[in-house]
Length: 319
Image (cartoon, rainbow, N blue to C red; front, side, top):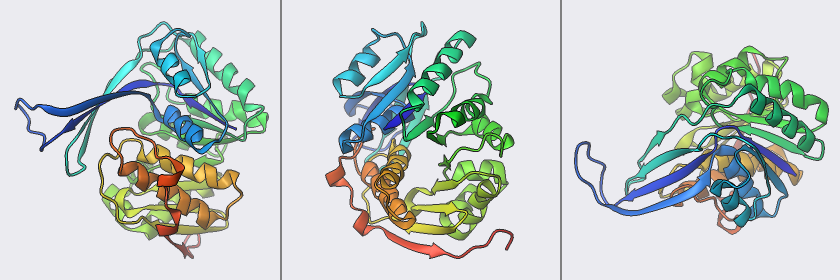
């Protein structure tokens, strides 16, 4: 069972353009799609497609159309009542795969709603293999909330994965090792934000990415899966490091690719695969998602881990 938590869910609307985006111009879209989304929701959607039991915890009214859409898609969810109107995120995709995102801030969560969400997560975590805390935090939420949730979830017996950025990521790193999750999934830009490196260097150089990810492992995080865009990903644990190169992919939309990668890793872990195989499955899921429109989550038959090249990197901490 994978329990996901999306603190700031969104209606994801994707505008598909037939040509390049031009500022100030009047542009006719080829199509517009809309889907209930958010990083945790995307992972639950991938779980349903792969036949893995999942439950999505979200702040929303029980009769919100967002909740009805999730249930109609076969996603079991536990909404915690929230009076705010869920945000709308707009994605603009161009024919060459260039993706522009306009993300709304979302409604504020009251302290009472945050407390209820934490209680709901801890209750559901008791029967979960993994709890995934994913995405941004709503406006006004203390940035250390994810760190506090990790500490609260530790006694449930579930393993904890975190995928976030900006101030919540910084706060989580600042609270290591006390708030160390079992798995973190930063991208190159997020790695650079707390290591002082350059994002483009980390994305193009797996050795540099491993060295940056190693700082998290040294601080108590059991596993770091760092996604590096078109360059694949690296996996770092106390026992070793691996890098993976993705297959040739015609990029249609990168939205949801990182979420798919995280699910691919969790799926490999649930299937008791070796670390290099988990990494291959993660990269295969991310590549498959990048080749699909909008926030489409790949089906298992669209994922080709056998096309991913994985090699071990013997890098010792401190060298």
